[in-house]
Length: 336
Image (cartoon, rainbow, N blue to C red; front, side):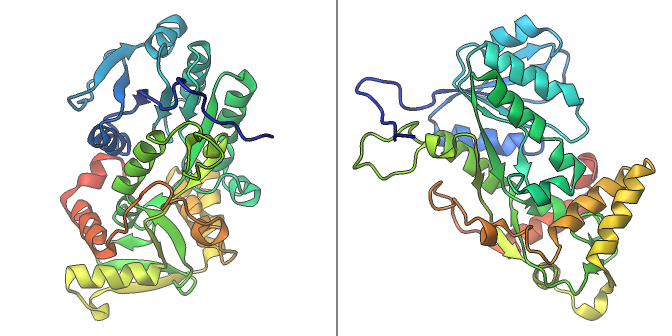
């Protein structure tokens, strides 16, 4: 396909951005970064009757997701729609948003696609919750009115380190950790602020290059593709070393056990099949630590951090945040 360039006088930047989940766990960081960049008019799409505290400085439109005409009207005039929602959200909710965005001619959608490398068929199909996301990308392309961009960021570091043994294997409160195999398999992981910056900076790019001499990144580079970002490439042992530093503890203060990664993955899947939702987390996280290295997209794909102007971050700083959240109950309030 021939390279497209912006034409003189054409609109070459996204201006109006709608977001679902603006007050949510990841959404609030996206909103903060969008506001900080100051390039967009931001609209929060919220459920009618909802009680979420929306940050100041953005427009709020309350709708019923079952009211298609109202949802279309709320999205009319938007250049991009960002969808963030929990894994337990009704499965048809995102479908309704995508269909309304198409009817409203919203040209860009960032679906609820923040996590693993779902462009990798093997990694995607090994985990049901990842495989289920394919339908939304396919729907966007089928409707033909919008383009999608997924954010491959790995798991959120603060959320996953402090979120309990089912995630990265750490029980911060009880000073215990389960190492998968020998705990040395590296994965790519991102902080919540880095995820927010990535989305805001991505939507701040020019849509098209100005001409053949323009080598700067543009939004269309990511059309119907994933943007790959990460804050850290670390193993469980790297995480444990960081935890020891920030808590000023030593190895003898911690209970360390081991579990074969494949067995853990299979155990999680069996728990989920039996109706134990904790198994979803166990299997989902364990898959990223397989020795095939597919959980380290920095190595398998390379990162778009530089294209998106993302800063380097300090591991111990975010380990400290995670430890604090685990101890003060912050993560419990978000269902971890």
